[in-house]
Length: 77
Image (cartoon, rainbow, N blue to C red; front, side, top):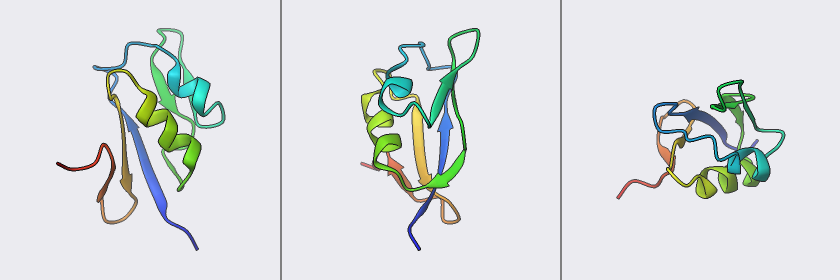
């Protein structure tokens, strides 16, 4: 069984660029205020969700390992 991720969007940072929706259309959606929301906050590890987080121009998307809370993205310095 693969890793499970917890995905969060910091809506105080989100600028509604929709890059997350472009890279992971099954993982994110924008609300009427153009704020991003993960479709499933707890999900299987997924390359498209990681690409979406990496493509966010303001790094508003955080991914952690479900359970341990260990950072997946952005990586800890």
